[in-house]
Image (cartoon, rainbow, N blue to C red; front, side, top):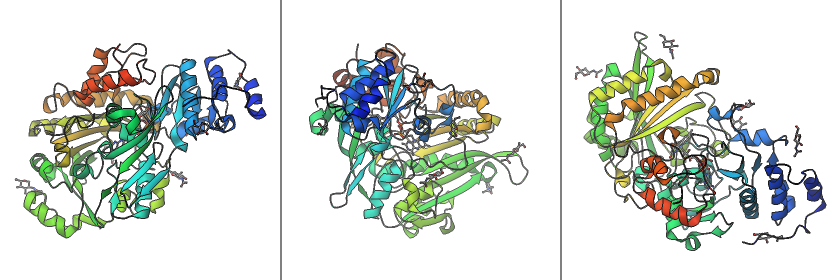
Length: 533
Ligand SMILES: Cc1cc2nc3c(=O)[nH]c(=O)nc-3n(C[C@H](O)[C@H](O)[C@H](O)COP(=O)(O)OP(=O)(O)OC[C@H]3O[C@@H](n4cnc5c(N)ncnc54)[C@H](O)[C@@H]3O)c2cc1C
Ligand SMILES: *[C@@H]1O[C@H](CO)[C@@H](O)[C@H](O)[C@H]1NC(C)=O
Ligand SMILES: *[C@@H]1O[C@H](CO)[C@@H](O)[C@H](O)[C@H]1NC(C)=O
Ligand SMILES: *[C@@H]1O[C@H](CO)[C@@H](O)[C@H](O)[C@H]1NC(C)=O
Ligand SMILES: *[C@@H]1O[C@H](CO)[C@@H](O)[C@H](O)[C@H]1NC(C)=O
Ligand SMILES: *[C@@H]1O[C@H](CO)[C@@H](O)[C@H](O)[C@H]1NC(C)=O
Ligand SMILES: *[C@@H]1O[C@H](CO)[C@@H](O)[C@H](O)[C@H]1NC(C)=O
C-alpha cells in the first residue's frame, strides 16, 4: 500500500488544525502532523484522533480499561489515542509512529490482565479498534468474517441472529475482544469439543510494520501460524479474522453442584481429577473454589462447585454422569436446559436478560472485584490430598476473601490437536488447567500489594504439584511475574524464560517469524516475542 505523498490535498480544516501544532515542538506533535500528511483522507482521520486535550480522551481511554489497577492517576497514559475507521488510518499511524519514535499499543477489547494494550513506560500511542468491529456471518458456509475490534458477545449474538444451531469456540466473558483473545489462544464452553478460538481461524487480514495489508495467502503459513496463539502485540495488527463456525445442538444443559469441605468436597475433587479429563468432549467440566463462612458455625470453609455445560439434553446427560461419576450424585434438579446462546448469558450470570446485552462492549458486572491479579498452571498428575489442603489453607487467608480458584478439565479434542499445530502448546498430557484469581475492591486498592503478594504465595506453594521445566502458563492469562523484556534491548535468552512457559518449543518458531516480519522489533511490549538480534 502506498501512502499519499502530497499535502496539497489537505482540506482547509485540517490545515488549520495543523497550524496549532508547531513543528518540532514534541514527538507527539510531529507525529500528529505526520499523520495528517500521510493519511490519504485527512478529514476522516482527524475525527478519530484523541489527544490529551480532547474532552473525549479520558472517556475513550477508560472505556475498556478492564483491570482497574491500571485506571489510576499514576498509570502512564498514551500521548494520543487513534480509533481507526479505515485501513489507511492504521497505515498512517504505523508509518508516523515509527518515524517519530513512538511505540504503538494495539487494543481490541482491553482485557489484557496486565493492561499492556493501553499502558507503556515509553512515549506511546494507543490504536484502539473500537471502530473496526463488523461481524459478517455466512450460515450456509458456516464461516464469519469478524473485525478484530468486535467483542465475543457481538460475534455470538450475530451468529445466533441467523442460526441457533451454530456457535463459535471462543471465551466465556462476552466483553473480551477477538483481537487479543484469538491472538493468545481463546478457550471457552466448547473447547473440549472444538478446540480453542485460534484453532478455528481459517483466514485473517493483517497489517505489518511496513503498512502492507496481508491475508493468509500473501502472509504465508508461518506468519499465519504465529498470529493464531503466539500472543497479541508481537507481529503487527490483526484487522480481521475469518472464523469457522461450529454446530451446537438446539438444547444444551448446564449443571452445578456445590459442596463444602465438611460435605466431603476434597474426596470429590480427588475423584474429579481422575474422571473429568475423560468425560465426553461435549462437556467442559470445572471445579470452582472460594472461601466462605459456614452457615452452620460461621467458621471459614471452602465452597467447591462442580459444574459443566453439556452439549445435549438433561436426559442424555444424567446416565453419563451416573455411570462415570456416581459419587457426585448429579440429579435433574442440578441441571438446567437452554439454547447455546442462552448459555453464554448464563455463564456471565445474566440469565433471563435480553440477548442484546451481549452487544454492550462496556458492560461491567455490577458486583465483584474489578481490581485483580491472575495466574495459571497446568496439571499433569493428580494433586494429592495434602496439596489440596495446602491450597484450601491459602484460600482461607484474609487476602483471599474474594479470590477464586478454578480447575478446568482438559482432554477431549485438546488432547488430540498436535502441540505445534498452533503456538498454543498445552495439549495432550494435561489433566486440567488452574486459574488463580485474586481480586479486590476500589476502597482497598491502596493495599493492592498484599493481594499481589498473596497470589505469588499461592503460586509458590503450588510448585510441587504442577507442570515443571517449563512451568507452563497460558499466554492469555498474562502475568508479568513470569518475566518481562527490558524496555530497551530484549535478549532472546531473557524472553525465552516467559516464552517457553507460554509456548514451550513453539517459542523458537515464533522468534523466527518475528525476525522475518518485524526485524527491528517495532511491535513490542513487556512480553512480546523478540527477533534474533
Ligand atoms: C474478565 C476476563 C475474563 C476472561 N475470560 C477468558 C476466557 O473465558 N477465556 C480465555 O481464553 N481468556 C479469558 N480472558 C483473557 C483474555 O482472553 C485475554 O485477556 C485476551 O488477550 C483479551 O483480548 P482483548 O482484545 O480483550 O484484550 P486487549 O487488552 O485489547 O489485547 C490483549 C493483547 O493483545 C494485543 N492485541 C489486541 N488487539 C490486537 C490486534 N487486533 N492485533 C494484534 N494484537 C492485538 C494487545 O496489544 C495486548 O497485547 C479473560 C480476561 C478477562 C479480563
Ligand atoms: C494542550 O493543553 C496544554 C495546556 O493544558 C497546552 O499547553 C498545549 O499547548 C495544548 N496542546 C494542544 C495540542 O493544543
Ligand atoms: C477510572 O478513573 C477515572 C478517573 O479517576 C474515574 O472517573 C472513572 O470512574 C474510573 N473508571 C471506573 C470504571 O471506575
Ligand atoms: C486511500 O487508500 C485506500 C487504501 O489504501 C484506497 O482504497 C482509497 O481509494 C484511497 N483513497 C483516496 C481518496 O485516495
Ligand atoms: C463423607 O464421607 C464419610 C466417609 O466416607 C461419610 O461417612 C459421610 O457420610 C460423608 N458425608 C457426606 C456429607 O456425604
Ligand atoms: C466472614 O467472617 C469474618 C469474620 O468472622 C467477617 O469479617 C466476614 O465479613 C465474613 N464474611 C462474610 C461474607 O460474611
Ligand atoms: C452497558 O452496560 C453498562 C453497565 O455495565 C451500562 O451502564 C450502560 O448503560 C450499558 N450500555 C447500553 C447501551 O446498554
